[in-house]
Amino acid sequence: STQKGEVLSWGCNDFGQLGTGEEEDYQDDDDYFLCLGPQTVKIPGEARCNFVYAGTDLSYALTENGKLFGWGSGETHQLANEDEDFADEWYPKEIKFQSSAEEGTSVVDC
Image 1 (cartoon, rainbow, N blue to C red):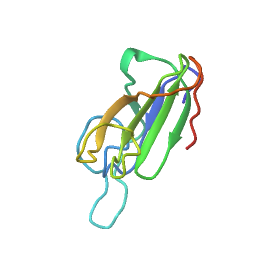
Image 2 (image 1 turned 120 degrees about the horizontal axis):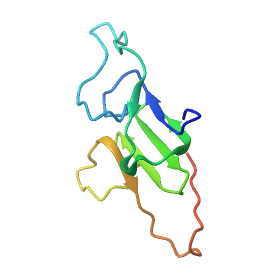
Image 3 (image 1 turned 180 degrees about the vertical axis):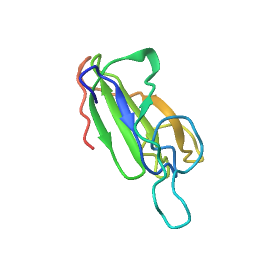
Image 4 (image 1 turned 45 degrees about the horizontal axis):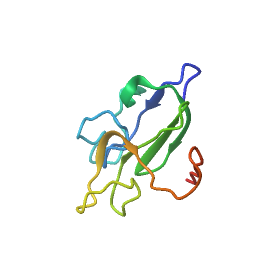
């Protein structure tokens, strides 16, 4: 994330891992990336992000108020969504946890 807490993305977008909402890939037939440059990822609630994990097929952002958002491939429920079809997320979606731990305690491991 930037010093202002913004999230930027660029590259391939097979599964929505750029988080821009555009359902198109930025690769040509020879697998060259065709991205025009960094694009801002709009986190719901315009929260500032402290940490970002950018993987090959998905991304996560942790906001300063402790909310976790994920987007990209949902192939094996790694976005913790409740979709039975293992759907991809093209926009950042909040990941809600069910926990028996004390209120305010969270563990995230990417």
